[in-house]
Structure formats: C-alpha cells, structure tokens
Image (cartoon, rainbow, N blue to C red):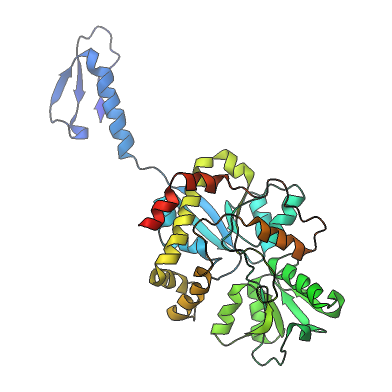
Length: 357
C-alpha cells in the first residue's frame, strides 16, 4: 500500500494508489481534508492484517501423572494457544530444583510440590501459589514386586529412595516416620535426583523401597512395583496439596492481564480433563508409554473425583504440609497465597459459563 505526495507544499490535491488494499484499480484524487481519515483507515487495515504474536511461556512439572500433567494437557489440547500463548513444557525432576529455576527467572509457571516453595517463601524468596488442584497429598511408598514388606513399620532398617531432600516425597516420608515412631536414624534415606531416578532404582533392584507421587503408578501398571499397603499420605491421614500452580510476584506485577489469561487457560484445561475423558487419555498416553488409554482413564478418574471447579489454594492443607515438614511455626508465610486472580476470574462469570457449556 503506497501513499504518494503527502507533505508536498502547494499541491491542492494528492493522488493515492489504492489497489494494494483492494479498494480500487486506478489513481484517485483525494482532497487534503480527507487525508487524515484515509490514513486512519489504512493504519487500521494494516493493524488488522498483522497477526498478534503469541506470548512464549516456559512451564515445568516435576513428574508424569494426571495432576502434574495439566501443563502438557493445556498445551496439547490447544487451550494455551486459545488464550494467546505458545509454550515449552519441561520435565524437571525434583521440586527444589524446579523452584530454583522459577526464582532464577528461567520459568514462568510450575506445577511442583509445596514444601520447597514454602521453605523458599519463608526465607524471603519471591514465590506465590495461585491454585491447588486437591487438598490431599499424592505421595506414597512403593516397593519392588517381590518385596515381602507388608506395612510402613517394616521400613525400619531399610534403604529408601526419594527424589531430592526437601521434596514432597522426602517431606512426607520424614513426617510418616515421626508419626509411626520410627527414628530417621533407623532408616537410610537416599536422594536419587528425581522421579526417574527413584523409578529406575526400583526397576533395577538397586533399592527395594521408594517414595513417589502418583507417577509411581506407572510402575504399577507396568508390573515393576507395587504400593506398600497403608503407606500413602491419604491412608496415613496426611493432608496436603497436589501440583500447586506456582509463579512469582514479579510476574504478576509485570503483566497481570497475561497471568489472568494463563489461569483462564488452566481452568479450561481442568474442565477439558473433567469432561473429555477420551481426549485426555489420548494426549496423556504420549507421555505415559506402555500404559493403555483404559488404565489412564481409570487413573484420571481417581483425580476427577476430588477436583474442584474453582481450585483455590487450600490454606488448611498447606498448613498441614508445614506440619509434615516439622515446621515450628505453621503460619503460612505472608504473601505466599494469592487468591486475587481466581477471585477476579470467578467474579467475571467465566467459570460458571464454562461449566454450563
């Protein structure tokens, strides 16, 4: 689109070539008084012709299971694209490592266990929880298929693998030991670098016992491990949270509107998970090799039964996480929970409309 002659003094009329916008095929004479309006029209046409560039997000989760895989589901279902984002979703074994990357500015949002972020916020770090899917921890003890261990008390004297010291699994294990009257010195706790390390340790026979979240069920489906009876956080009466969506205050202050859009995409992903079982299973099967769509659907149904439409951070469950950590002060660190974004989205009628579709 070419505009000629504008700014030439003493010219009573200007000639504008309009073919570039499909508005004509000849030179047209336009009076100077109309130049402003024509330029406005041309600028608007150009702006609408240029696509808005999607915002790139760096996301991370710490394990492969239904709750932790919401980030993958948000990407592959098209929900992030719908709200103007592209994303790279990283699997970073170990919650402490993931929170460190978030604080360093390498990540925008993470789904990671609460203990590491609670410790970081208590020490003054800029970390904020926006949502928690459930109010129960998914951590549990797994043993090799040939293990003769029958209860949590049988762990005395054993070598137990965890992802990282300070992770959700490590925190659960130490809390469960205290609750069962077993001293930490009566067991050997070995950090194995992440979920894959614990899984590989169980499969190879390097360890007999390992602590994992729901991702440990992949081993069960493949016949490589079994849950230890009575040794899950839920069975032992521990409250907690699963896959809290975590970001930073600086992210919210820099572009609150974008954070609202991300949370809308996340909420619509949860709705997709709840209402489109077949689509969810097909997507997740790509990341859960060797597990059938039927088993994935049954696994996801366990989570569906306890999900909430508005997944506000459960502060009582977070305090229970602090109790499990053995924290002397179980008051949540100031500013750790941010409900204002979910409040804003709920008030707009977005969630009500979503579930009425």
